[in-house]
Image (tube, rainbow, N blue to C red; front, side, top):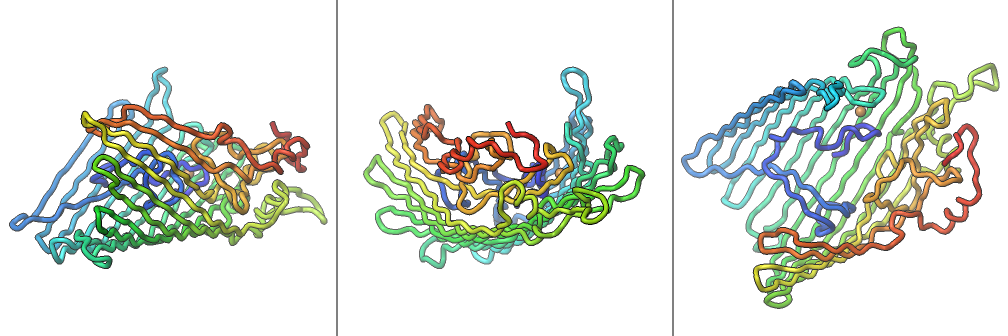
Length: 472
Ligand SMILES: [Cu+2]
């Protein structure tokens, strides 16, 4: 699932309550290729695990409530399941009503929201090892206030459906297959006049959507000599669309299309992966994985004009502008269909020491593909310094571990298209309780700095496109 707003205030975790998960797992660093490409910092898994009903057991239920005085926040939730050894029906509901909180100086910080979350899980456990599970979640956020932002969110809705099947007996190749399908819809609305009193000269309203569908099949095979292979494939397609409307500050709903923020952006990713764990000696073992991703992106409405004139006046004015006009202005191209072939992987060697400790070393390479905002955002404005235009082309790689101002620009007013891939080695020492005792991280010295010779040359020739403020 991907959030529904280009400013990234609605992370995927926004669309579920804490009580909706039974388990949260953190995989530090690049130590698996099963859950997608990228993620050099690590992978966080949010999972719902419904234990099987044992014979004679009929229901389980729990309830929780809480109150936070500073923000006057009430939370109430319940989790109930009925079932038998053949299956279960589980329902989780949660309600949170939060108000603004007061900071240490006694000032009120805009942070209020209301959240309703409902989940239904239907499980069919035909044998002791198999599970067929249908999952549906509806999440509703209302009147979410943002400190420091120019808009708030009157509503933000998510609906997710998932179907998965698994067996717990990896005897044969087919027995151990775990297929999974999902579809998620997000509708997110931002405006500057309904949860707050209008203070800007114009009313602004920005509805956006983010729909993600996909699936994957994983197969875990126990081979001879203690080797375990995990192989699989996954597919994901995300579509995002966002518009911003403007209107006079005299009430009513703004209806003039001011910007096409995400112009019907499609991002499809097909992955193939394989991971191997094998013992080498009594004390040494090896884990390795490789992953290939084919990425295909396009922007279906990039040639559509917004309806607020950049230059008003009699013919040949007024001039209207599309996202492609903005890409042309800032990056010199109208080309917005891209494909990528990305390869990542890792090798980990683990050595068990005396005294219940182990040492391990990992060498990894991960590639994260750029998202809809980085590729296609087209937030137009009469003032050049207020614009936010993104267009990553062709085989760019992004190094996400080091934050930098966005959009990244060079003195020539061009975005860096060729950031280095992350190649790093980690060495960790852990005790038997899996606590990390130490870590050595080896990185290339210039990681995070533009490595493209062409861009470096261009950066010495300052050139601002018309309408854009001088760049730092
Ligand atoms: Cu938002």
